[in-house]
Image 1 (cartoon, helix red, strand yellow):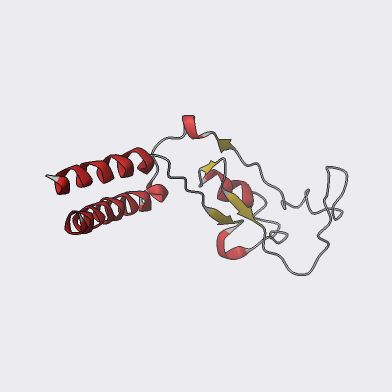
Image 2: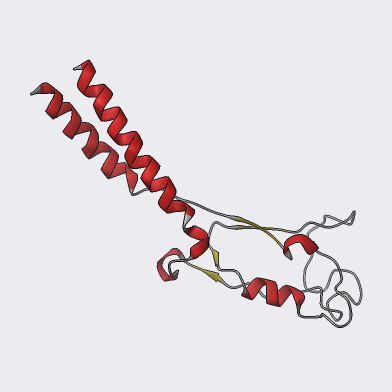
Length: 130
C-alpha cells in the first residue's frame, strides 16, 4: 500500500511540474550563408530567410560574420550602402500565446515521451525503496 501511495505522490509531482518546460531555439541568420552583403541579384535573401522561420519570444538570432565592429548600432549607424544592397531583414516575433504548433518544435514531443519514461522509472524505484 505504501508503494502505491509513493508512486501516486511522485507521479502527481511530476505531472504538476511537467507543464513548466520552456524551450528556445537559436537561429543563425541566413543559414549557411552567414551575414554578408548579398549579391546584387539577391537583395531579399534575409527577408526570405526570416519569413521562412517562426520566431518566439526567447529564441536567439545569431549573426555570424567576418571581423567587424561589435558596437551597438542604431538606424543611423552601420556601413554605408549595406542596407541599400540588401543586408537587412524584418523579423516578426510571436508571443507564446499566439504561436501555432510548428514542425521545428516537434522535438518537444520526444522530450515529453522521455519525461514520461523517466517518471515511470522513478516511480518504480520509489516503489522498491518504500
